Image (cartoon, rainbow, N blue to C red; front, side, top):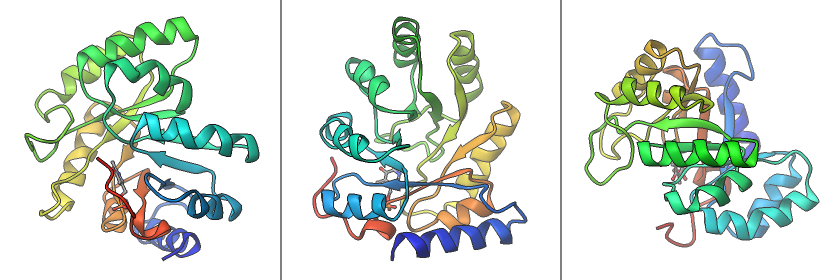
Length: 219
Ligand SMILES: *Cc1c(COP(=O)(O)O)cnc(C)c1O
């Protein structure tokens, strides 16, 4: 796989879903990938990237940003409250807002820093105990809480259970976003992004299909 192939498949999926070309944003997930692979994708002109860990992004991206204009960086992994400040300084968008304590911390830091990344609320659509995210039942209340704090919540994000058909999870996320008047849906990875687009994804997070298999564990 490669960047042009993935972009072609996204364009086709948008078309199949009856959506205008360019509806779906591709986040190239560069976690754990060697710098040469990341730089190759930057050289091909891509500028939207995702990382799972604040520390790793802090080591990698300031240098790339010095060399390439217009980089947009998304945090896709769990965020510890004590890393919120660093995350807000590094990332343009955080996809993993999932609890009150973090929401309050981000709100406090936003007024201190004078800016806030765009935010997605992560929903644990599969109710998996080991997985982050608010439960489906708590989503409406948590969206309301974040709005009351003045946070720029733009959409919902999910990671469906690995061993299940993702379609009902994507459909449920879409319904939850609609009932909360949220326009953005962050869903779909290398194995299922076309399915996610068919279900209304506005952002897909694709790693290994662009960069090749990850060479080291991410956790
Ligand atoms: C690693 C990761 C991805 C990309 O996974 P691939 O299967 O390599 O496309 C997408 N989203 C999240 C949250 C991830 O952690």
